[in-house]
View 1 (cartoon, helix red, strand yellow):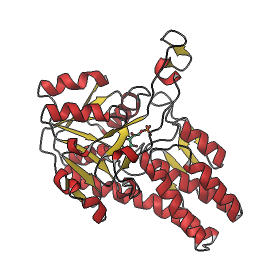
View 2 (view 1 turned 135 degrees about the vertical axis):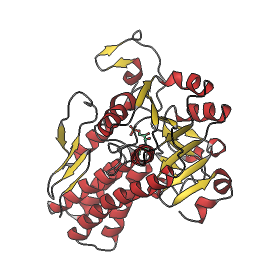
View 3 (view 1 turned 60 degrees about the horizontal axis):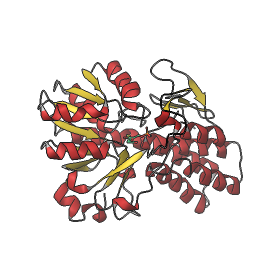
View 4 (view 1 turned 180 degrees about the horizontal axis):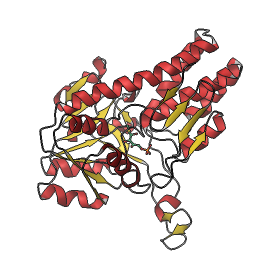
Length: 337
Ligand code: MRU
């Protein structure tokens, strides 16, 4: 086992820990998630989050369990519990399926560990590739609007949509970023601003409801977002609020691109309607933690994700290249990514 480290994950060959993202930006506390129960709790509470990072973290957790000498039955059962921890991000299931295939072909503990390490290293590479492809779309001086958090905290590489922004910045394209705060859990306000500050990329924080005004006033040249699951027809699920942004961008004639690795494409989902959408606790909408601001008993609707139809996608940025809306509609994803 080798030591692996990213912005939000550390693996020393035996112990796995993640940066508790619920405490950012005020405290940088690492929590041990070597045990499946701790990992499941961390995933459900969003201490660890972001579709690609969820896959890598769950795979390494299973590798840790294998290291303890767990039986095949135990590993299979833990894998099942891990894959149920969050239902929308398909990268979680994709990574665990890769480990399951190793078990099915009678692979050893070392084979399992090696596969988990490959998944980590592959994500780093995929982030680089999609960021390079996406940065090729960006002109000098663009103002890019982004939603949720899609950077080093959501992957083990430089990120998806935020990776594109990072690359464009490194290419001296002088980009400015509008960061949607991303209600209800504020991944944009807490995490994306934290990452952009560390990277020295100029940015402005807005509430989600301010995006349309910026677009109307010509202050947004492009919208870049991540994806939690992409259906074969090009519809995709991402953090709730993405669909609204896509509608607004379409109305204002602004290019709109999801950015994702091939591990986010789900060959089992024909269209967006097939994507399961996680609904979360009412308390996330009623207020923050102990401090509710709505009257007790208020009814709440709290889907964590929404689905954007392919008609609103200008092009999809994948690690293997940029796919136009026309190509998506003509079944390009079904031909293999
Ligand atoms: O609920 P979260 O914070 O895990 O949601 C994350 C997103 O919606 C991201 O856009 C998505 O996972 C892609 S991140 C590279």
